[in-house]
Amino acid sequence: MKLHEYQARDILAQNGVAVTRGSVASTPAEARRIAEELGGKVVVKAQIHAGGRGKGRLVSASETAAMYQALTTDAANNSGQVRGARVGGVRLADSAAEAEAAAAAILGKYLVSIQTGHEGKLVKNVLVAEQADIAKEYYLSIIVDGTVGGHLIIASAEGGQEIEAVAATNPDAIIRMPVNPVSGWQPYVGRTLAQRLGLAGDQGDQVAKLAQGLYKAALATDASLVEINPLALLADGRVAAVDAKLTIDDNAIYRHKDLEALRDKDEEDPLEVMAQDLGVANFIKLDGNIGCVVNGAGLAMATMDTIKLAGGEPANFLDIGTVNDPQRVVSALKVILEDPSVKAILVNIFGGMARVDIIAQGVVDAHRQMKIDVPVVVRLIGTNLAEGEKLIEESKLPLIRATGLAEAAKKAVQAANHAA
Ligand code: GDP
Ligand code: MN
Image (cartoon, rainbow, N blue to C red; front, side, top):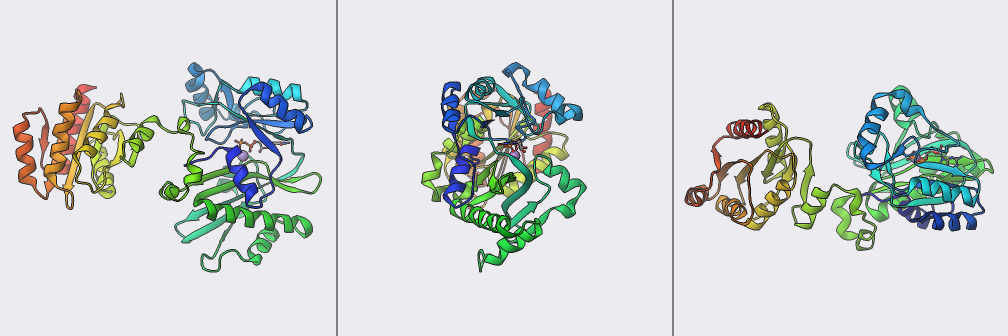
């Protein structure tokens, strides 16, 4: 689960990370009031679940696809603004009136950046924060990294908006420091980090403290990612987070009832939200036209591979889990049928602990409860296969049957192509 910048910076501040002052506004008038409180000189920032806002563009709903095309294909379009921005989703304002105008220009528009996809993101809120007088921009993040088996600090003195470019062209400028999960944070970690970033004395101390706060925040929220870009050295010598990103591991959300309220479902894929609400937890929307109902993540991956091998494209990843509940199958089909790009469905079930007859009952129930007008290919194997076969036979439903996975994938691709 991703958080908005204004939510992430509050959590970071609670854990001892220095952030600039600011608050969130949903109307231009509110933005003006906050700017007045902050003394007028502020930055007004679109709050969406995507980065690259500074270099993004604000458009109406009908213009997002063309703008995304322009931003992603033409480098010239993507070198627009950096500092002192008066366009895009991050704008500097030197008075409360300018802040109000900036908020009016951003709110209610769609922000398109190289990270939003062609649909862009509707901006519902802006963060109004004290304008930082930035002397130098750094990059600092902490991720949970599988290869080091724990938290990994990633930092660079070449921060700012082009960190991906730094990683590609000058990988030596990227500092990578694992945090030992047994000893946890030790003072030397912060000192070493500061030194490698080239910050000494008081600034070194500030960075060390800030990084420790970032680690504390990551632990406290079960974050898979906390990122500050830019981490700014200000003209007055302070070091502060000027941007903040925080992603909570979805598998840990149940431990954070207090953070659940921070979820913004508008930012998530509507089908994925629907799947979660229906208890079909492992659903990821993809771009193809063959809907997949599978049990087990490994089998789901294999099913998608086999569809691709047969020349097709899966419309989703879906693992209904090891359940003996026909309703789960009905719910899965319900979510898939909401996707207008689905032209065929492949149900691929291996009955291990799950029972084929119960899954088959789910397929039959779904056809009785909903109008299913796309072809459904069913491949079942394993526990209680005979009972399952019998249910499907007796239902007289026009299901396309297959015994092997390759055969099932081929039939699904044929059915989808025929329907398309
Ligand atoms: P992002 O583009 O979505 O990563 O949004 P950021 O919050 O990182 O803002 C983009 C860029 O705008 C930053 O890299 C800074 O260069 C600049 N920026 C953001 N806030 C301020 C500020 O308070 N003062 C100044 N001078 N520049 C800022
Ligand atoms: Mn940023």
